[in-house]
Amino acid sequence: LHSAASDRSCRHIEFDLTGTGLIYEAGDHLGVYPENDPDLVRAYAQRLSVDPETVFSFESSDGTEAPTPFSKPLTVFNALQRFCDLTTPPRKAFLKALVDYASDAGERERLVSLASSSPDGKADYSKFVIADQRTPLCILHEFPSLRVPFDHLLELLPRLQPRYYSISSSPKKHPDRVHITVALVHFSTPAGRRHDGVCTSFLASLGPGSHAFTTGVPVFVRRSNFKLPARPGPVIMVGPGTGLAPFRGFTFELCALRNAGEVEWSGHLFFGCRRRDVDYIYTNELEAFVADGTLNTLHVAFSREAEDKCYVQHKLHEQRDLVWRLLSEQQASFYVCGDARAMAKDVNKMLHLIAEEAGGKSPEDAKAFVKELQQSGRYLQDVWF
Image (cartoon, rainbow, N blue to C red; front, side):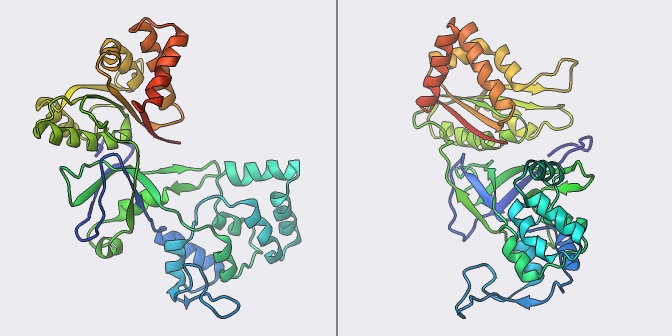
């Protein structure tokens, strides 16, 4: 979705739901079960001195089927790729369990220290493992005398968890398909290791010829209360970057509702990106929605096009009279999607300021007004850290 000038990557991905029985609503989340990178899986197998094509299964000590993903025969490669979290920094219990497998006395002492609850141990673990974002494989390499049996490592590694993405489509427009909008995650850790997001890298690898493209990707729908209001009316949507995802679905929904005769709906979108020629995603669609009246107003903050950075909260402030009129007179619903660390907090602060400046309220009354929006279900957030 980004132009060639971007140093980032954002993908539009569609899944065919034909024959699956899956149904969704605009605003729901799609859960995706990812697979680990094949090269990373082979690196684990090599460090553990196991053949990745070896077939195995677990059984309980009493001979019954073990209640794990490994109770059915599968290869070492498939077990590590599909079921094990290979990238999350390990917990202290993991390090403690490795101590007996280290043949070097110095390495054993360091592992004991990292796993301890002493002040020095906590500080060492916080820096060496958490801050430097070392993975279990990093630990195995940092302590070369470790000889961990493969079956025990499988028990120690956490299970690979699904990742959730805001659905960016509407069943009214896309009844047999579900869309997600995904920003690829990759960065260098403080220890100098390249980190690639497990699920975003997996999704980026999908395409004709890939195994998952042929066999299908395990997905499911997680219901959300992030929905359009039950009654027609104004909808204010605030979402920079991939925070636009659910609002793309909402806008398709609004278009279908208005075409069905519910003309009381109105849409007001505040979107943010860096530059219009770099990462203004879904540009043509948004402009078409403005042209056909689905979006009554579209306000885009380009944060890198001027000396003073402009974000969505600044656009809200520019349109404070409109925002206040929609909220106070027309009972509009207010939606925010995106980063919870900064953006959502800044938008919340701006909403208080708008109530003071455009609504003439005192700080205390502005706080009460925003709280009432939240309690009445007219101020909803879909945010992440």
